[in-house]
Image (cartoon, rainbow, N blue to C red; front, side, top):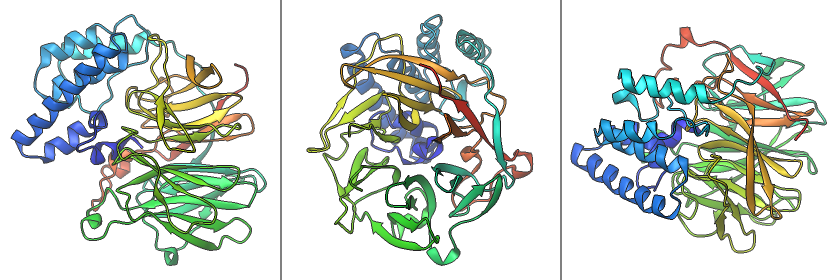
Length: 414
């Protein structure tokens, strides 16, 4: 969830990459500089451990921009040219102060030109209301319908045969809807509901996963997470156990089938920049980080960052999905938006490489967020427009927003 990672990143190492332009702008100038300098120092420490890691170079450049150190930032970005890592500065993601700088624009164009253009995946259907601001999507194969969550309107809608209607009701008292998942075995729909990035959280913070009966649309349960700050995405194990990321604290929450609440699983802050989450058929649990992907031990909650070659970048992923022994990711903060296949090796313990399934050139891309696998494709929310939405404010420039496009990115072939 790109935009709200910006809002929630205070105090998180490398989650500040997305937080810099918004959170620090709201801080006192001295506090902002101290926070940025501390983050820069941490990145530099990591670069000593992983000197060839391009995403760390990218993040260090962003920190220099935040500190007003233009020349240092441009030198780092310039060093990425020719590496074909898919690292391309994104507007409104921390580079604002240099965005109109001719030299910065020249470098950005060179980085964008490094990435080969893939054919544009077809638009499967559109959501007519541009003020919906969708973030999460899930597919019900039996009912042949998509569920889509609205951040701005605090509801869940359902698309069936391209017809859109409300699924949830006002009586459900939902907050912003993020992650969605269908439990095909038990015929449930799960949805993350949170006010963690809204003003109302200052009075009462609300984080929960709600469960609906797919047969009749009835709201069955609300599993609260009293210790969470801002839940984001979720995955369901074969036994019905829920795993949910808390992006603001960089942590993971879990609920076993017999439990009624979500509780912290593993150490707080162990998953910096936690966002997308996926379970493999063998039960392996993967969580996206600011700098890559971690595999989490489902017994202890201990994460291990997957090693990867310096020729690929897996940081900045929002939605994450398992498919045919690999992972599929949607990047939207280190790139204007692309879909990648992440090849796993060594029994899922190492990343072997990345294949771009949909490059950033797609004409519908404007902050793509998450997707749902259906009928051999990943159906992606192509233009979420989360950057046009600020909690407690009117959606900016709504008249200029196109209807949301759901594109179908083919997954056949490895």
